[in-house]
Length: 243
Image (cartoon, rainbow, N blue to C red; front, top):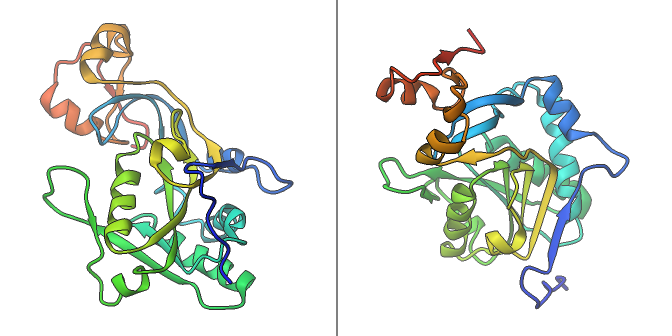
């Protein structure tokens, strides 16, 4: 018999930082995933830090270990399908399903949802053959690399719900401040670490944020290059961290 979800909504928020296992934040800093500075996010907000998980993806063994640790908190939840957003988190669906399958001794599916190109807001869709049937009526967890402003996470939750999936929880490697199971509207949230930094809307940043202090904007990580095109005369100037 499948274990039942707790009836009280948003009952569980599980933060995994150290259970005698890998120190996720230490490992992410070591390979350059976590940076500080003045960045522009996909939401156009100004950020006092940036987490770039593209840097993580070539490290296959590290990805494997992080996802094994992340899905450990779901091993007793009778998960049937692991879902991720495309593109960078796709490996998480397979590693997550792999480790949960080893634990349950049965096949767990791993699928992903693609971004809807041209949508006015963040939107995902299951457009690959058989993916919807691997979600409909199944007990699902959603995995992602980072939850920042929660827009992508909520869009994924909507996509899985619309496809008939039963969302057991959401897991991420890191999350910014304010992210919770209640804020996402899921019964359970699991994360390996937190990556908290201040954020400002563009007009707020000009008044009280990093722009008001003329802190240079990083143009080659995040969306600083787009900001530079529309604000070439920004008083703080621009810097490149990669090249």
